[in-house]
Length: 200
Image (cartoon, rainbow, N blue to C red; front, side, top):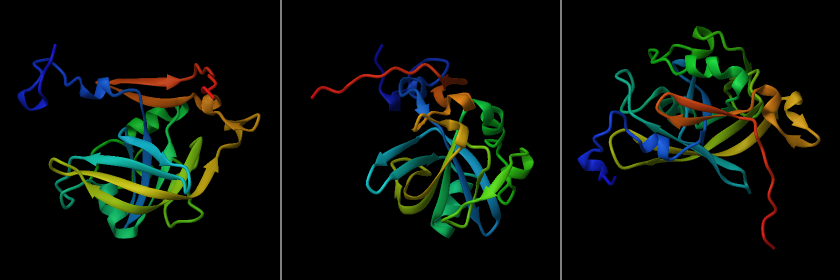
């Protein structure tokens, strides 16, 4: 099978999300003039080591925001955000925070997710997250298409849950493993690890 995206694929569901998978989920918390926000994004990844940097992409828009979603709108206001790492023990909370709430509604409150203040930025983070990356936005890049944006940030602080540091390594299997987006309604909890040495 071959298809051109602009011509359509003829399948009951778009296969693109399932092809580029698994994708880690960045659970992005922000604070703006309308309050606190928390939302999961599966277009998320780390992009550099020194300084450590991450990115996430937001697609689509809300009627009560100017051409984007709450997360991007609030990052434009404040220049900061926090990436909470999504794990299996919080999968229901991650899903609940994806509800299309009106701007100004706090997903922390609506979904009953415990929060705590960040250390280096003025923003909340998920108290029970296996890890959280406090970030200062470095750039927001408009992407092709309507209301598509890539947000880049430099990490200014890192929180690791104590039970997820095992033998000196970050290992969130005690938290149910990393959860990843696979496409459609499918997710995976990453628990089965293996090691390989790179060629010298």
